[in-house]
Image (cartoon, rainbow, N blue to C red; front, side, top):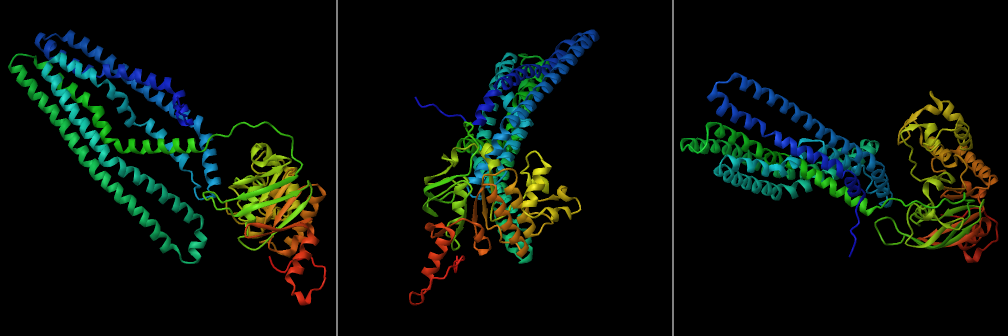
Length: 577
């Protein structure tokens, strides 16, 4: 028998099962107490008015007062239970969902970078603490009211059943007519919000090149689709809600007419006539509430499905055995790598070895697969085949939290985070001033930081704030060399640097070599090649040359020279890459 795997969301809801049962148990007593107004009215008409007893009226009123206070306390307790369940779900799932959203962005190459899972959890929690969910707790106790109505008179019970059936049909019809449209509208709205966020992150480009009109038009096309779907769903839902409300009020009036007829026939008392109408209204209230809050329910159901989907698709990290600190030796064997979401390899069967403390320049034309290879070397993107081993261990088998402090990475597109410069350099770990300053000095950005109004406490954003491109690159370099990394990968580290920055980078590479750090530099510029031990040439995703720097560069130079004019001239820079 196949065991159905539960998602973390389902497991979390199971942990809250007792709380839901307690809320349901309270709902039972709340619904029993909801009978009080009808019974009180019955007693007033059939006992107090006929007897003229003021003491009876006083005692009944006091009892009703106590019962209503009790009901209010029970409703408050039920709402607090659901609030605590909501908070517990946040506690149990927020960290897991943050990790899942992070991995979704990572493995999609940024195409699915979104906070939607966190937003979905928030929306689901809000539904759980709203009035819509109470309708689902109260609806199961509907038979209680119908049973009491049968006790009043069989005709009352039959009419109640017919009314419930008609309202239930309207509820089902509401789902059929609006469910799919609301789901599509919510999905389109998510896409539209994602588009807005991406556009706002590139506001400078949009403004400088006058792209706002075209970008806004594209967004409006998506927003218009959402509007049309929501309008259609709201039109249908509004019509059904109106019919439902009208029918419920009609049913309450008709049961009064039925009661009056039964009074004339002397089958029930006037008190039962009024009580029956009140009771029927209370019995139908949960169904009416479900119909009116169906839009919220559909949204919550979509959030639940999306959360389940991402949690099942991206399992939680398993705890890995702690390994000794790496020394930095790298063994790449037949690695084939494709960007996330595709199966077409960009890196094709690359193999090489680096001993701890060696340095490597990866060169080649644009779109040769250099940055893709870099992501595979760091374990950011998985390999289709082959292995990348750091100190003999598959880079994917390392615990990222343990490995992270020993890795330095400066991506081609430098990403700084909201926080101070010190926090960015320290990778948002515990601040160690000596290490932060040492990293900044190594990246030759210490004096620049001190010249800022708040120094290392200067707050920057994801785009670097007031930092120039070169300053951002140096802060990113300081972050890469922070602490005691054993493997550092720099992707185009000198793309935004001036001559002084190039010299500082060269000095940083010499310092890292003295410390025995394994360094890999991807570059199109020759300025740093003399500081590196080996060179790897990539072309069309394949390794074309690998070896000691002078050996590879001389070989490339000879290949580039015309055969008739081959001259053995030592050269440290290839003609083009």
